[in-house]
Length: 181
Ligand code: NDP
Ligand code: ZN
Image (cartoon, rainbow, N blue to C red):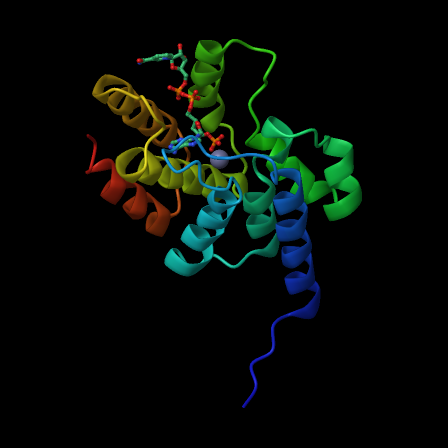
């Protein structure tokens, strides 16, 4: 018997994947191999859909798009036009204000985590899980031990502020947090 995907949901998902891969096409992650940037949004959807069983289409599309406003020339209006207001809002919720200095942005993330909407919470958690896995296994080049430890500690502070975090994702987070360098 054939298993059919929901056509509209799957089409939106693939459009988000294509959009993110185009926007991030010239970027690389900070690990020694300079991995393609798109591996990171794909890691988020794998954590959400494959590991945590989350299949809400807006959440998965927002995960694919979560770094487009922060790290590329993408505007909120562009996301509204292509994916609608709800997905664009989710991406905005997990976007840092790049006009602020880095230390200030990191403090803001901790404060802002308490006010995340229910659908933005899984995206934020998956981002932290993916980045801690990267810091543990393929960290940015030239990050000494203290910086890797600080990153783990800061991610924990953010996650501790997320209200009612989905249990499956929280246990994935605690599993990787247990590998703090
Ligand atoms: P960055 O914000 O510069 O880098 C971490 C971010 O890079 C991640 O959140 C992730 O963001 C992205 N990223 C890309 N590739 C990787 C990878 N392989 N592994 C993990 N993350 C990756 O670093 P910090 O979080 O340390 O923030 C800078 C802060 O650190 C400032 O406050 C600064 O003052 C301080 N600092 C500390 C130093 C120290 O030695 N302790 C030295 C210099 C600065 P995304 O998911 O958004 O792509
Ligand atoms: Zn990210």
